[in-house]
Length: 77
Image 1 (cartoon, one colour):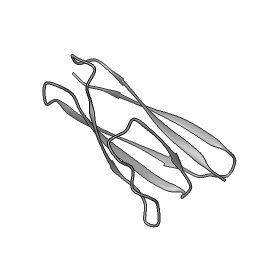
Image 2: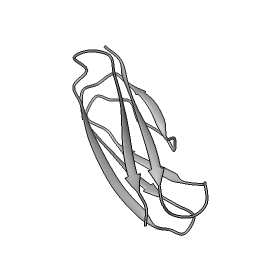
Image 3: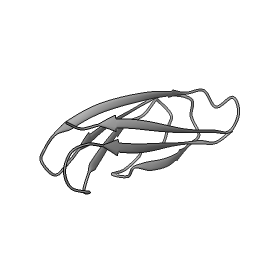
Image 4: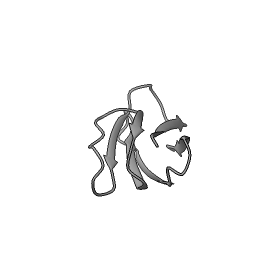
């Protein structure tokens, strides 16, 4: 069953963020985007960097037992 991940950022300045994803084996690569559909269960990590160069990394585990849509909230200070 497909699912999705969505990054919600809080804190920091500016609205331009860079997203670098690490996905489980067998999953399609996720580019520099805040949201993506996922079809492989496992841990998804995202590093978010803002305009000032501040970076934070957040993770979520997706099981894909039922249709899932999970938000990852990352705070950049």
